[in-house]
Image (cartoon, rainbow, N blue to C red; front, side, top):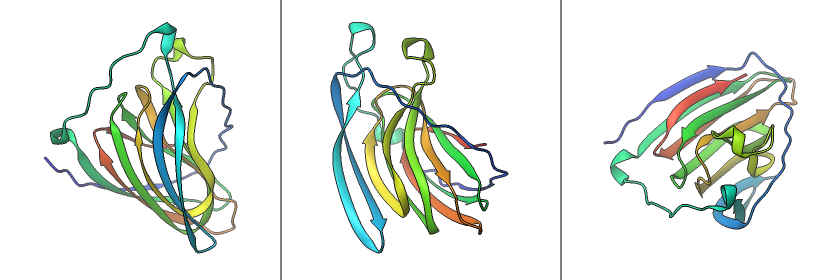
Amino acid sequence: MKISKIVVAIAIGSMVTVTSCKDTNTKTKTTQEQVVDGNQKKEVGNQEEFNVNGTSENKVENSAGNDQSNTATIVVKANKALEYKFKINQYEKLEYEWTANAPLRYDFHGDPEDKDSYPKGYFESYANGTSYAAKGKITIPYNGSHGWYWKNTSTKDITITLTTKGNYNIIGVIQ
């Protein structure tokens, strides 16, 4: 079943402090494309995947019947920041593309659902930088909330159009 939704969100604004620590032992392949100064750059990298408490689970391919496609229009107010998140299970695949009408700082990351198995404040950053567009695919390394932090350092509002495909639940804007 294909589901299409349009979500409009306006940020009231709040700062998010981003920290990271990792205890890892395997790799997850991600592909990220971004546009910097009008030039498209493709990065294929290995993201670290976790072996929690010395155990690991076999990867299970998600059912294509559960995939959905969505488009969200997100406005990041001038000199403000916000997050836009999805609830996604481990080993699900997420395809994404976002474009903005001006460059802004971004961090595509995930927060684990099982917080007791990770250090306090833990998250994993999949891609970050400053750009007005990015697209890619990722296999999610753990159950949790996954999405973007965008920071607008300009004096004008920035509008982002985010298109996603995968098996997830939309959490939406987090301020």
